[in-house]
Picture 1 (tube, protein in one colour):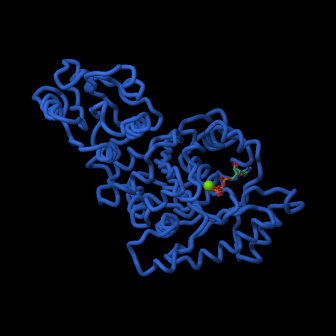
Picture 2 (spheres, helix red, strand yellow; picture 1 turned 180 degrees about the vertical axis):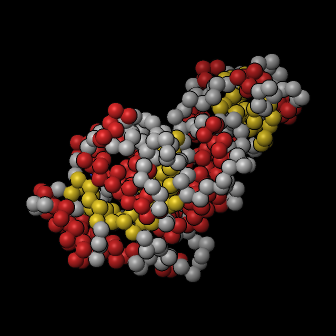
Picture 3 (cartoon, rainbow, N blue to C red; picture 1 turned 45 degrees about the horizontal axis):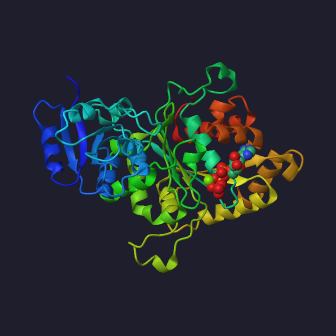
Length: 429
Ligand SMILES: Nc1ncnc2c1ncn2[C@@H]1O[C@H](COP(=O)(O)OP(=O)(O)OP(=O)(O)O)[C@@H](O)[C@H]1O
Ligand SMILES: [Mg+2]
């Protein structure tokens, strides 16, 4: 027998009771899991993964294409009730089906038969089954914060490529080039990439996703209510390729108060149950608002980054391999010792965009020597500068492992992933 379809109901007026009765009737194959009073409640219920179909009044205040896209992003299909007015206008919202009302005999079929979401942001149910298995071991993955100073040294690039390598995208490297593609290495576990940069979130755009996914802000909202579990988090973090999931960031910097430190902390704690590795793209600033320190409930501007640094098992510190970038990296490493939260001493330092034109001949050695001398960095990871490769990736919304698997810049990030596996005591892929 087919599984019962879970339905969120956001219907206005007296028709609401009729719809709930029709969907809850014995043998209907459907069940109403939430009766929502307004759009905000509907979106929250969808984000929490409580319904696979939403039945909504076409006239529900605020219902537009953007809202329908957000419901789709949460994996919820939409059936609209419209008893009058032009059908085209309602279909133009992007809903799956339109029926006349509770008495329309097509209602049940419309709810049961709406095709599963094909939106790339939606999450396949089978991927979630392992999270709900009562017999499987509870995963306790590691959290990696990717941080670095201002000046766009490559925090996002490092986070994306590191996550791709940890997820085994594109095979193990140049020697296994023929296996390259959107497939995962068999031995790898799930990897979650989180956009916690509250100044310039961009993972959705970088990976070619629709940027109106609820992502981290929705997860933080559910976490703040104490209701975030592994399945809900996974639903909010669509699979972008192979075993790589992404939790997209806030679409405007002004929305930073939505990502409070306590909510992000709870999200990252749950993330450990979803993924073997959670890689967090952090913002560049780590100062706390001194005046707000006494008010522990006041949101802090850099709370999301501070929460990520505090949660991290290892911090990857990224700097740019040019004279100014190296100077900033030295100061950043000092600053990391002074942040107002406890941060693991486990650090991996990366000099990105290494090139002779910026620092002279043998640039990797020159930068390593400077960092050893001024910041005591004993083991520096260097990643070469390759604008053509990175531009091609950004254009295609793909990772180096998929787009240019045999490039030396990809090898640089693969080496970084190998170091992290080493720090975690995990055998190399
Ligand atoms: N190794 C590299 N070779 C060439 N280009 C690179 C390399 N690493 C990063 N870039 C490019 O540098 C630019 C900035 O990188 P990125 O967005 O990763 O930096 P960021 O530190 O996250 O910046 P922001 O402060 O905007 O968050 C991007 O256009 C990226 O493609
Ligand atoms: Mg960035």
